Length: 183
Image (cartoon, rainbow, N blue to C red):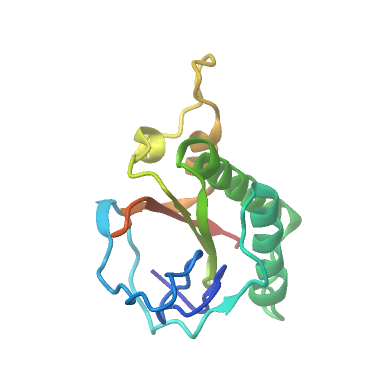
């Protein structure tokens, strides 16, 4: 993963690569075991990310996740050489909304949310409480011909994001991560 900075939602201490919310209980040992990979698409790694900058509050809704992701882009990704367009910010909001809503609706709740600026855009990581890997996550992104209980969420994510990864977490649940291009 091409990380240049890591910004995460957190409360308490964290490992150097990412912060998670909620934190481990006081006195609990830190887990450093890698997640079991359900399906992964990766990119080349670069230098380790600097220490994350936590949000002031845990993200518990799609609206909070959208606002936080937008603020990271405006405050940390935009610079003198590049600025995300309003169209790119709308695409980002759509992807964040779908991932967060899926975590709440199908994943047993939004257990954490991270935004990591990269040279190409931002990597989102959404943690939930379910071990079920969405079948549509690695599909072609085709829109449903009619509504059968499944919506347009994954097709939107597949069309607007890339490098989609679903990793099972050691303590249960999973992390869905995607790269949303801003350039």
